[in-house]
Length: 300
Image 1 (tube, rainbow, N blue to C red):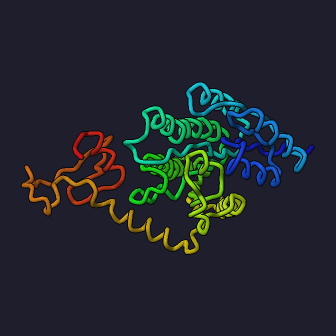
Image 2: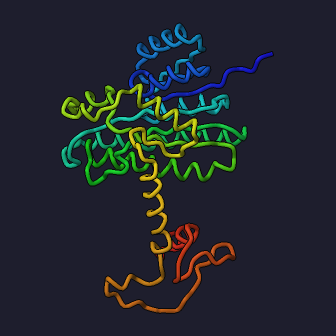
Image 3: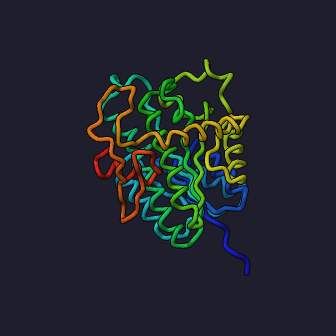
């Protein structure tokens, strides 16, 4: 008796990146659960995928920009048969923050951060229970370029959240059999640009096809990259960035203010911050656990 095909759930799967992931994963032998809010487009996509690849395709119509839609997707994940989550649904609201309506800002924060985190949390719980699973979170290079927001500072901030969330989740779940990848596409030819009112043509010399982007991201997935930047030719640049970021850790939370601020410390005593009976931080340096302890105690 042959084993059942693995199942991938893809959010935002009616067009663009999500639709391309659906096609590529079906080609790899996955059965699919495709999610979006447009039932007509989902039905068309399901027929195409079944005809092309012979995959079983389940349609999950739910709008992840509202809590009811999130709950529907979470309930489906809680059935426990999803092997791979592609957390792709997102929206880009362009322009200065002061020009956005509160409703536009709320919708972007909800979909790009809260909904993405809730869906990933549900998948993580079921995967940990099984001892295996994979999560792909679609972030953006905007996570790294807050000083040059191509879309908006709000959009960049939401993608920075998703990158940090993915890196932390991978650390939490790595020893539990669950792999997490964050994908940081650059400018990619998808419908999101038109929806956000941005003319892609002036950027066309730097715009990657969605097919190339997803193929590169899946190659990174196969190589077990925790963060994949499809356009980055020199992986050493990312490794250097991470090395320099980690070099900051021992200097981020200390007992005394930095001398460059000219603030006289109240005490120079070297006192350890204790957490569950173990010294995790001193005035001489901290571990990341120490940073958490300091923040919890209100000392940082």
